[in-house]
Length: 323
Image (cartoon, rainbow, N blue to C red):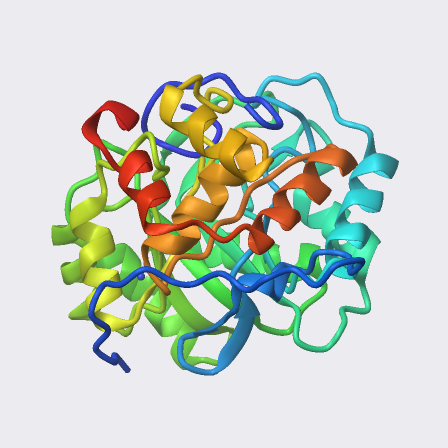
């Protein structure tokens, strides 16, 4: 299985209360000269209607290791990156109980870096597939295993409840009602505040929403990979957060003429253009680029200040710019 999705990839640092919203581009905030870019420079979004987060978040997937099978990352560097992310205004961190390499776990790194957690920090996690200590993938967890995974996240993160928990599906998974229902019971018990779905089709999203409200969807999506456009349309229409994983492509930033053209026009990097382009697609878009590099973290957050013109978006969304 890839680092965060159904399509085989090579991991590199850069490389599911509704309100109706018609799809429309978002105007990105200008960047005052001399001020450090801030994760909220592209605006804020109310997750589940009551958790305000900056639209640029941070993904913790690559903190334990750059790939599922290692090598191990530097824990001290990971802690420094997490603390700097919060300094830059990041208040939405995405993790998962299966983000680990041997004894190095993303949840433990987050707790070490940020506990006691600052007010307003939203930590989202995912449960679903299991992994062995050696990193091999197991079939999707059943209801009892999902419950155990949530309790494990609570212990590892040092929380008495989780802000947002996604049910992560595998490509071979079918109906999700029984497993999503198990998480809904934990929500009713106060252990989970909001529920999400990940790696799911529009049909699976609809199935989950018949059981309990879905606050966020996390699917593989980028300017160069738009196979979840139908799910994104539902999220935009109904005010559900859409949290794209692999927002920079998954194989590293793709070498596309459209990206180079727009990047040159704005004196930006292609990675910044990809993130700014996502933010401009819809106000429900909440990218979570992940990195263990302090420099890439700064670069990603600075993308919130990049204002793309309609002609830029036209270039970036042509069929030749997507796969």
